[in-house]
Image 1 (cartoon, rainbow, N blue to C red):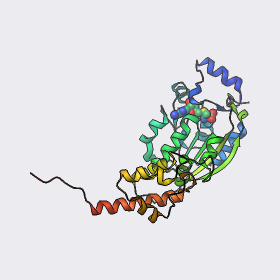
Image 2 (cartoon, protein in one colour):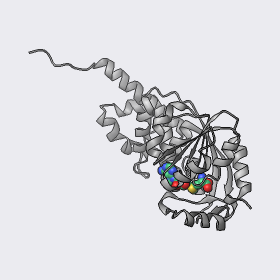
Image 3 (cartoon, rainbow, N blue to C red):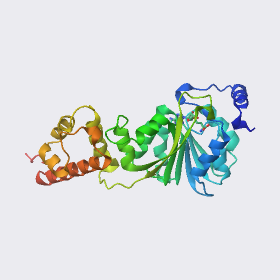
Image 4 (cartoon, rainbow, N blue to C red):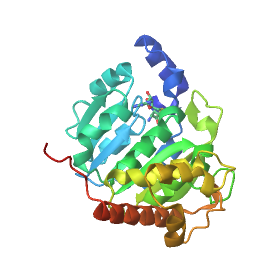
Length: 295
Ligand code: SAM
């Protein structure tokens, strides 16, 4: 039994190093070697390719990935773990680590365009990080994430279901989600109270000329702000504040304003965004920026 397979060895190691587990960082280590192997198969690492790992912990997956000859950049929030990882893997030529909250640090490395991004993500920062990647149109070859099963279900939910949310729309618009397999709590130390799910997200190039898809995200959030309300109520203030004719938006997009946001598919939201964008562009042409006259 190796270091990563044995809760007893992990416990001893942590106490010898004076490292306490921090609940708020969702620190549950993957102790099942079969699950680690299955994840590695899904990651399909190739020598020389660039990968990122978010939240490597003590290195349960890191070691396997590095042994495949990958250039691996890790992002870890726990400075105690960062020290351990540097000691254990600092000699690997492909290894580098960025200490701190990945939500704040990842953008500095965005231009690296890794082939793959992997993360066994804690619930607290997992959804934020995934949303952040998508909103910034950050497209690696693909992502493989381990998340709480409920989060995976939300990401993959169909319109009209209870689990469907603005996060589902964001995930499904900018990526194709593939649920790979569930991982039981007993595969982790300490055991979490939830089942986890491994999923793959393959980025979709979406024709949205707006930088970072900001308008799209604003529309989706506005539509879900009150789940029980119709679009004509949830989106009206948004359209009015931009001086856009409501009826024209519905006519052009073909979206029925009596529907509720939670029944719209990602494609419907894209149509709505394109119509609003086109109307905004026409208005800007008709009423170019009014400059004050010289006095
Ligand atoms: N990958 C390891 C494994 O599978 O055994 C550990 C996974 S554990 C579920 C989550 C890891 O993410 C922990 O090491 C935790 O410290 C780290 N983490 C939590 N929030 C983070 C954040 N915002 N940025 C970077 N790392 C984070």
